[in-house]
Length: 213
Ligand code: SAM
Image (cartoon, rainbow, N blue to C red; front, side):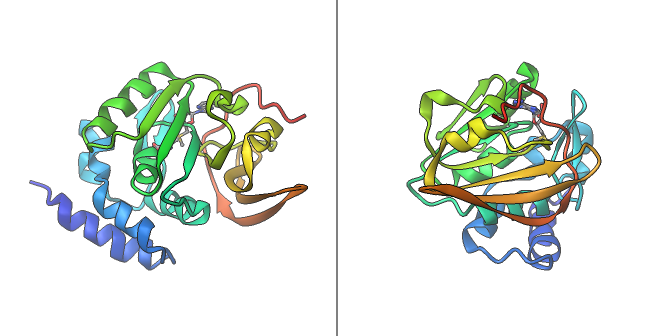
């Protein structure tokens, strides 16, 4: 019998904190949202490991540290509406839901969108809405957003996403080639934006029209 509470505490202390996650809201979200609810039956025993795990359809739930780092860099506030591209298992959306007003998450694979909805409903979160679609085009209906998080790797910065971000808003996106990405923080200003490369990472690709003009 796996002691998930113990495994989760160990993940927070020996992975997240040791690797530099200091934001209290991020750490508290990882206590509230149980990662073992977001993986398949055969992977439950590895759900608090320091690694990404397969969720089927060639896709993954990201490494806990990367989820925490992206959350800490996005800095969601209580009244924010956040757009996530790449729902996958729903874990990242559930983490964000504990810190902001509303999360809209877009997934291109219908079966994963259904998997994520089921997983999130088990956490009791009621402020996440998941849509099936091409998230590289953003989600215009609820734009502009206070923050945007892209959880798949893109060769280009989709300008359409930037256009859906409020001035003062932050976007976090893995940018680069298929083999290696740079986790990139974008801060939108009134008259442009600034980018900061944070760390190397590896993501499954963002598949879509990726409007970059
Ligand atoms: N955030 C997820 C989680 O917490 O489990 C992990 C995301 S996984 C690394 C990347 C996801 O992005 C996959 O589920 C994939 O199907 C999705 N994806 C790739 N391109 C997409 C697109 N254009 N629009 C929406 N989702 C996309």
